[in-house]
Length: 208
Image (cartoon, rainbow, N blue to C red; front, side, top):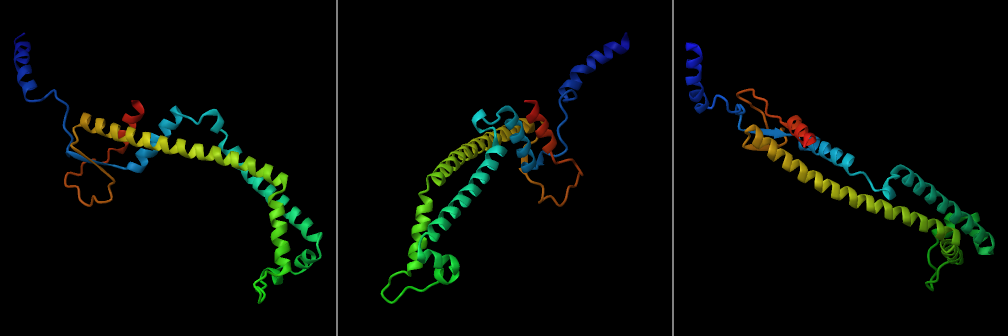
């Protein structure tokens, strides 16, 4: 009984000395690998905020765009070849394309006839309805890609803000007065204390 009374008397004194307060870190500052923590923040937000349904088929859309682009090239080539084959000058160009393409302008400034034919054939290929239809589909996929880019940029801004908030709250809760992004400049640590709080901040971020 006497021992219990002594302990009860000591409790207020221990409390006043901060005995029951959270132990302060061995150093008032810490470092964080911001790139690693930022990746964790973005992954967490990505899981909570996936692409809308219209933007979800990223791999398939990009594969289809490449396929459409190849189809445009193939259709244009067929159209140009057909056009060149239909004119004598075009036939000459097909037989010796390098000589015609690199021909120098004549003295009166006019382009060689073969070049004129080639320009007309390429212009006609660009106006081919199938080419126009394929390019319209490519433009639609490009629009989806632009929307994804804007979505990702907005997500990155939110992740940055979430990381700053988590770092501030973690530092405040653990008694750190300063958190530095990166540890490359640390070449001496007298107390050999743990100064990297990346894992702690990520854990805090995921828990809140």
